Amino acid sequence: MAHPKRRQSTTRRDKRRTHYKIEAPQIAVDKATGEAHLYHRAYWLDGKMYYRGKVVMEKNQSEEVE
Image 1: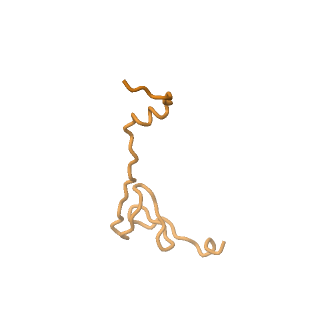
Image 2: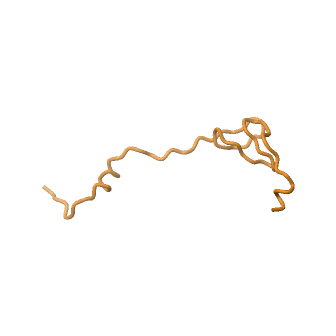
Image 3: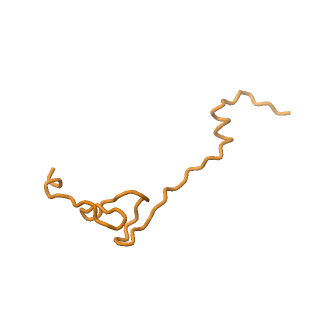
């Protein structure tokens, strides 16, 4: 019967035995703008912040200068 030359660490053993996989983040497409974004997150588009298809906030001119 074959024997390993060196003892394998518990970390390496556990990595091999795991069944956890990386999942891709869920991406939603806003019906109003057609922009792809993460679920439950606001996003910027053309100087306006959108959330659930509605404008939540607009970027001021003074903020752009800074």
